[in-house]
Image (cartoon, rainbow, N blue to C red):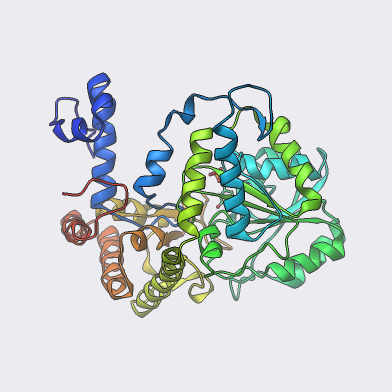
Length: 433
Ligand SMILES: *Cc1c(COP(=O)(O)O)cnc(C)c1O
């Protein structure tokens, strides 16, 4: 894609972002181009979504101008009359939506939220346990290149090669042998329901604090489409921008007994002033997540993923664990004879945005792996339903074949068909027409 030139037609930028278009046409053109890209393409990255216009507005407010280190009623700066209420609202809504004792809405993003859990419950050099990154875990669960793997001693579990499912016997053996301070469950490429009760039992036996990282599935949990970790985990960590459909940010939920430790770890342990515009947008997203329509959304995300998995299986795709229970599908493209990265780049040219990903026991390198990861949160936000999943699977199938055959014309044809369907399903928060 060639970047837009500032000389291109800027009427629409000016209409949507008049001050920005006047002050910085170059940047305004880039924003307009991104709006167009998000409108025209089929976005299948499972960690992405479209926030509502209300969430977008809240995150672009003058709340951004305010410093408020500390917590409501206990700040290090004056002038918190409104900010305290914004944060209290976000906290109250988080507690109500997830049914938890305590919520901290200040972490800047998912990675710092997880770091706060380390700071609260472990000392440098302590043993911590999480799922290995190539198995579907997250960098911040003790993987070597991450600060969490360098400053702590990370021991890692995975999935069984034959089933693609977590091997709980191995998890228990490892936990009892290594006695970690922290056990993380959850991940970035797990297509199946997480058994939080099983993890909690193991953590109890091993004397570890259990952190359930639901960054990917928070919206499904909020909407009742995935079991909640809240009754089982000591701490729940989540981003707010994935299935939860809020701004880029994060939250830590905890039992009352851990409330102080978590709050102290976030501030002053790790961060300075909270991003109040983000806190406000989190409050709006949590309000949206409390509505009956969000339950429908969460269940539709899962129904779409199931239908898409079925349609892909019918076309001969190999899916890790054989399918999906949630919003996410991990395809192993080895039998299709196309590396994940080649397929992902070709699909991008076809207007289908995915990411390449390792599959468990991947014989290829992480930067050039065998898999592609897809998910249904974004397309569901645009109102696509199970009836559309056959054509989505067909596009992926044709796109992967075109990648193998280096057929750019076939990719261009798919791109036009995708844009055509997308034009009839406007995206929340984006201009129409
Ligand atoms: C996305 C994700 C994170 C990190 O979130 P960032 O906001 O990108 O830092 C942490 N854990 C899991 C399981 C995730 O999926």
